[in-house]
Image 1 (spheres, rainbow over the protein chains, first blue to last red):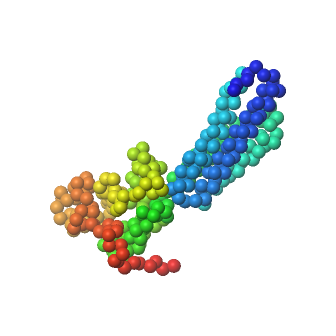
Image 2: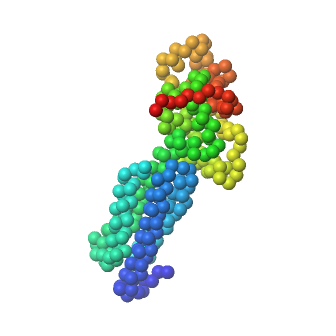
Image 3: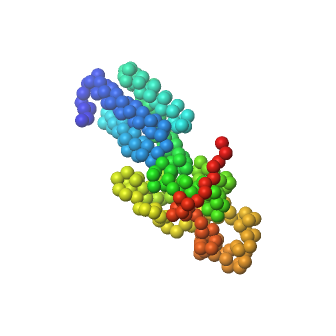
Amino acid sequence: MTDTSATPQKAHAIISKRFKVSGILIILGLAVEGLTLLWSHPLSFVAFLGLGGLLLAAGIALYLWTLVSHAS
Amino acid sequence: MPSVAVLVLAGITVVLIVLLIVRPEITLARGGKIVAFLGLFIFPVFTGILGFESHVERSKQTSFCLSCHVMGDYGKSLYTDNPSYIPAAHFQNNRVPREEACYTCHTDYTLYTGGIKAKIRGLHHLYAQYIGTPHQPIKLYTPYNNRECLHCHLGSRKFEEGAVHTADPQIMADIKSNKISCTSSGCHDTVHNISQIDHVKYWKPQQ
C-alpha cells in the first residue's frame, strides 16, 4: 500500500522496512544463485533461474516500487 | 568454480545490504540513497547477469551434457578404440576440446544459447529426463548439418584436397551446400553407433 500522506518519519520507517525486506530477498536470491554455481548440472540452472532469479527479481522489484511509490 | 567476478560482486552487494539493514537512517542522506541504489538494484542486476553467463559457459562442458543418464552411452562412445568412429577420433586426438566435446559439434543443440526453439527443446529435455520418459534411442531434431564440420574443416588441406571430395567438382559443391551429408552412407558414417556400444574395444587415456 502506498502511504504518501504519512509524516516524514513514518514514511522513512515504511521505506526502511521495505528496503529491509527487499535486501533480505536479494541476499536469499544471491545465496541460491551462488550455491547453484557450485553445481554443474541442468537442474542447477533451473534453480538459478526459477528460485534465485525469482527472489532477486522480487527484491529488486520491491525496491523500485518503494522508490516510485514514495517519489513525491 | 563460479567466476571470481560473480563472487566479488555478490559479496559487495551483501555488505551494502547488511549496511542498509543495520543502519537504515543512512538512506536519508544522498550518499545513503546511492548506496541503496547500488546495493538493491545495480549490483544485484549485474550479479544475476554474470551468474547467468557463468551458467551458460558451464553448459558447454562435456560433463554437463553427460550428467543426464540418457547421454551416458554417447559419452562412452567418445572412448571407442576405433578411428572410424568420428566423435571418438575427434575427442581422442584433440580435434575438439575434450572438455567441450559435445557442444563443439552440436552447437545448435542447447538450452541457453540459440533461438527460442533451442531453449524450448532444452526445457523439453529437462522435462523428459526428470518427469517424463526420454525417447530411446534419442535422435537429433534435424539431420546433422555439414556446417558444424565445415566450421573447422573448411579450408583445411585434408578436406579441400581429399581424393573423394575432389573426385568430381560437384561433390565438393554439394558437401559445402549441405546437399550431401558428411555422414552419408559410405562416407563418415560411423558416428556414435550406440547400438554397438557394448561390443567395441575402449581406449584408456594415460593419466
